[in-house]
Length: 367
Ligand SMILES: C[S@@+](CC[C@H](N)C(=O)[O-])C[C@H]1O[C@@H](n2cnc3c(N)ncnc32)[C@H](O)[C@@H]1O
Image (cartoon, rainbow, N blue to C red; front, top):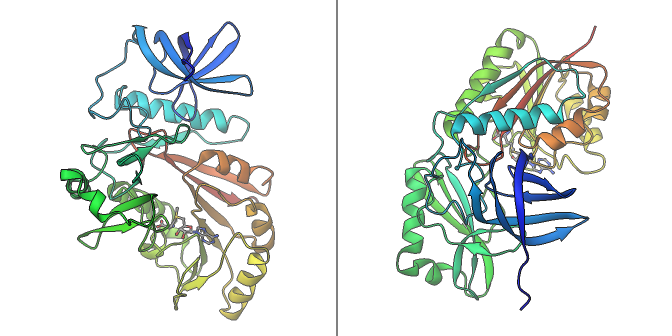
């Protein structure tokens, strides 16, 4: 086997995926779990398009704000990115990452809502397994290596108990479907019960936000911002799931849209929003219900909603609230929308210890 190459590094920035950036000898290297000021030696893991991806082997100079990570798995686990820094620093890095992306937009000052707890917050967790390597844990997206995480700190206490039970005496090996050598298992806490599903699509049992306290904050924020504006207004809640974001808002008329299998009745309409003809189908449904769209709330998956501009031109809502778990697709989707002004932009930290966060953008129709 070829020996891996070692290179020196000096971290001068952090990118939007939480990786440290080193630029020595005009060469750019990305190294996860590093901090600005770190210097040392790293092992090259991959090289693509003139850019190097590496992992720390030794630190010769540690950044002054480094702290000891709380989780024993942090250094090897690919899922957390910032445990080696104080939470305030993590939040500042997330804000900087958002502001970098939206530099070219005309935006009000970013409001930042930090999380009350950095650990024990996730009510849903997905692990990968391999019967070949007899490993269960988090899978590295580059190397596909699986790191076992029996003592993971991110899950709620109920999830942590479920995790430990899976690892105890390798219990998972007896539970994993023998006919699938590689797959995943999801542990989730719903209706006061811990459930487990093997090799099912993500969010088995219907999507729910993973951090309940932050979800309440988000809904409070929407209520505070929209309550005085809902009188007489019609709402279109896109990528609505179970109607989580709009249920408390008391719109006289609302239509929630998602891929509901099986279809649900009442305010819920089953439609693949990425399908060609989705806008037409929704317009027909709105006409049937005599619903004029004054407000839109949308909360798409990470892939975002490329067609937003076209939908706004067709439906002309007065207010739009875009809730996004990926600021890159959010920035893409907001481009070219000139009929609306951003009135508030908010970062809510739904995913502490990782580089992920939620953004909420309020838009109002000009004129
Ligand atoms: C980030 S979740 C938001 C759910 C909801 N707003 C909430 O707060 O619980 C994204 C939602 O998009 C839905 N979704 C994914 N792909 C879709 C598609 N092609 N068409 C319609 N909805 C889709 C998922 O089912 C999921 O409920």
